Image 1: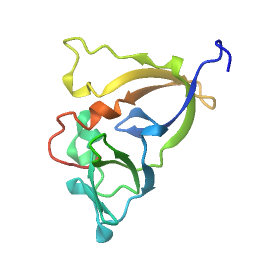
Image 2: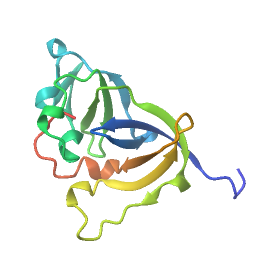
Image 3: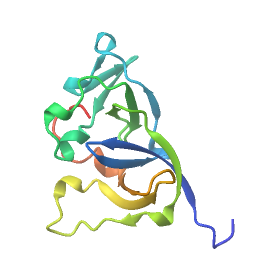
Length: 159
């Protein structure tokens, strides 16, 4: 790779409450079908049982200011992340995430200087991506995996 070629990384992107989030693929443990409530998929209370593992869920709907009514009781897709402390966390999604490759130079750091909302300190970078099929751009919010699951998000709740 020459010095003029930007470094490309793979990300998953997904929509929660009208906001588009991105996670680097290297941060993802797995993406699975979320089990229904009869098989351990209790998304409404923030826990999902996957085999012998209990996965706590991050409530991105609440974090972006959407009401509890907007949070799904069952979401068919689950993004599973293992924290540095070896805990399993998940993000339940109503639609499957997209896989995209983007140059890292597209992402610009987010300033967290006051009066920036402390609730969003887990968004490390933003990128504006042109959509090929549409005449619009999409803003991606890059989740900082190390910060997002240490963020004071209260008790486990659904995405």
